[in-house]
Every structure is written in C-alpha cells, then in structure tokens.
Image (cartoon, rainbow, N blue to C red; front, side, top):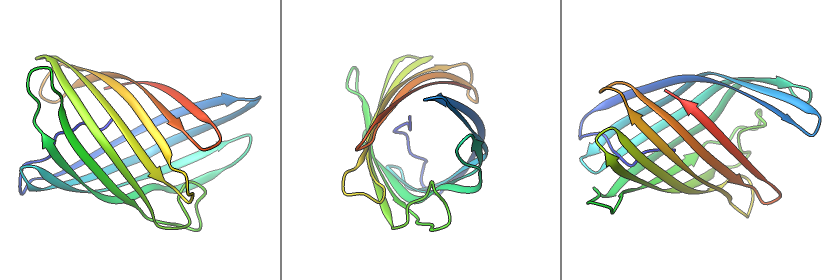
Length: 181
C-alpha cells in the first residue's frame, strides 16, 4: 500500500528493497525473487512529487523462467488533503507504465495507472492506510487493486507492517497478505 505523504520541495529520496514470494496454485509452483526494487522520488512542491520506479526480478517455477526488469514506470503523486481527526490524509497517484516487448510482465503498449491513497493516523505509533487503483495494462478493462495496511512505527527509520491487498483482473481475482519491516 502506498502512503499519501509526499517529499518536501527539493528533496530527493532513493528507496530500495528486496522480496521473495512463492505461489502454489492449481498443482503448479512458481517463485519471484525481487532482487532490487527501486523507487526514486523527488519533491517538486510541498504537495507534489515526481517518481521513477522499477524492479529487477528472477522468476521461475513449473511454468516459466525469467530474469529482468519489471514494473518500470514514471509518475507523480499529489497530496489533496493533510487529514484531520478521523478524516484521512488523501493523495492521488498517476503512473505511466513503460512498454517492453521482451518481458511477459511488462505491457506491449504504453499503459497507465491511477490511484487514490488514504491514511489515518490512529495513534502516534499506529496508522491505517488504504488504497484503490485502476491500471490499464494492454487491455480495455482495467486491473483493479485495493488493499489496507496497518503500520506499527518503532522509530524514525523502522516500521513493521501487515497488509492485505487484492487484484481483480478481467478474468480472475488474487488475494494476498504480506508482513514486512
């Protein structure tokens, strides 16, 4: 779940991570090692930022084997409301997904994503984030993403989180749960 906060004007931030996921479905197994997920953010005002993102994955299993770039996109996030009492902070996210004819996970044509990002600060150490997106990815019907996140702040640099998110494709639905730090 992407939070609604934006970087202050003139600040550049590089976020990196890695991950592993394994899927067992309909008698097949697959895995994805995200060896480097990168997000570059740059604050252009106190209420907007520019973004460049991409992943480097190693994927394999019973059906496919692939190593390469994934989720390469450029975009912007604009904060619409800072939040007040029970009313959440709200931002709008827009991305242009860059095509690649050599990768199964990237679209063959320029694609887009629009998302609404919300967050309530429940206590000084506990937040609730939620998000809804529409992504047009080589199809007339969008992929719908929605999910929620509980964040537990441990310090200025560390947060634990548990989230549940869903993808509704034109032909199927996927439900996921994730723990992270």
